[in-house]
Image (cartoon, rainbow, N blue to C red; front, side, top):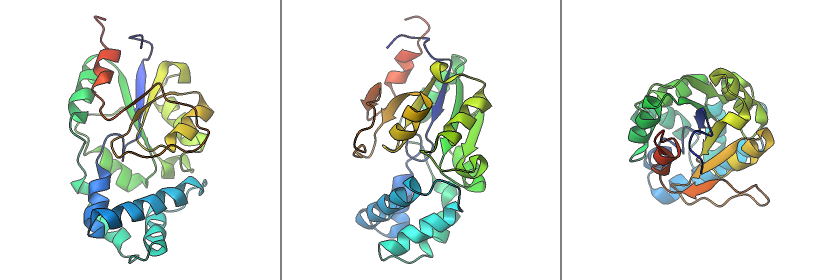
Length: 212
């Protein structure tokens, strides 16, 4: 990877930066229940397109796997408990110190997206939610709005995916993608391979090392 190829980085928020999976598991009562609920939510979101309230999709996913719809409200109430994956805050602090512009594009409501962004521990120049964009990823519009917010062309911006579904959307926009795969997701059939597929963000420090 050539250092300085990119001027900015857009991140998925709720999987690439934050361990939202553990929070879903906790709200659901077990890891197995949380993973079923989250997987169904991802399937629903992938085919939704035009924005509908995030909380409704979360409730629909719970009901679809035989869990109470009220869990969506429980999850919302606990959004402030979200925490970054180990090493994430330190990596973002390193990039920010090197004047790399940082933003997030997240499938979330505006209010909850702001709460989640505040849990990262680093100031972000752009926070784009599905509600703000009017569409859920992997529709191209949220990614394009993120690029616009950072004032950067796709060729000068790296996208850090958390969900495998981001690989579909970033390919449509022409965004080079680093897949931060903490949870071992399977990629959809036919997607373009990422530049890198790793379980940590640590390599990004070398990618943006001005002395390299």
